Length: 81
Image (cartoon, rainbow, N blue to C red; front, top):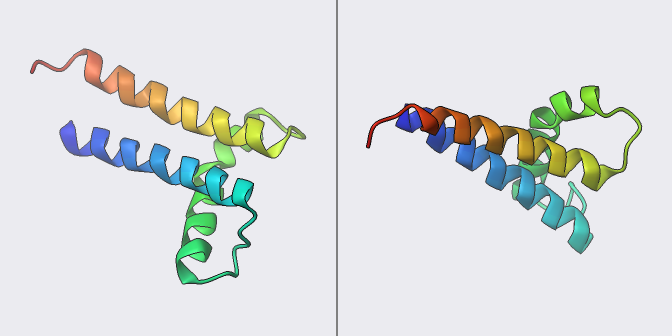
């Protein structure tokens, strides 16, 4: 369970990094790292894009990050420390 929660936390950080890079004006073709961040984040944001079609970029990004964070929290509720 701990590994799954760690992966979800990294997914949330990746999506927020994507939003930060887009806000700062970096393009996906700046270098290989930004290309990887943009590519992975776009794949992980597809569920939010399906639920919120034709919304602003930041709305979809924050909805995706929030959705993964909710799953992260729900996985931790039943665990015993």
